[in-house]
Length: 136
Image (cartoon, rainbow, N blue to C red):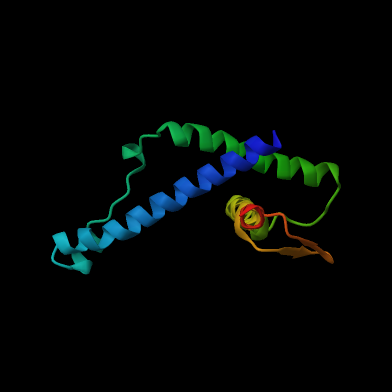
């Protein structure tokens, strides 16, 4: 389960980053299509709740958000914590997956390519790079 959660976190956060970068890179093309008339682009933005069609990701994400917030609520109730649920809980919930993924990606990169890894007074020199270097 731990390995599955790590792999899924890395895949989902990579996909989200890919979609954000793709949209950010296509935005100048969209502005170029309307001759960089930003005022007209802003005026044309409309949102109608009745035009929203949930896709597969929405159908999975909404229950997961509800379960996560339910877990936070019941944890606070059962722990008898009197503090309010602040914005930091929501920020943690949103950004933790990206920090978790980044941490594991960096761990794998260090394990594969770092000449040495120091942590807690220990030094590891058993990366893939060092093993290939000592075989040759």
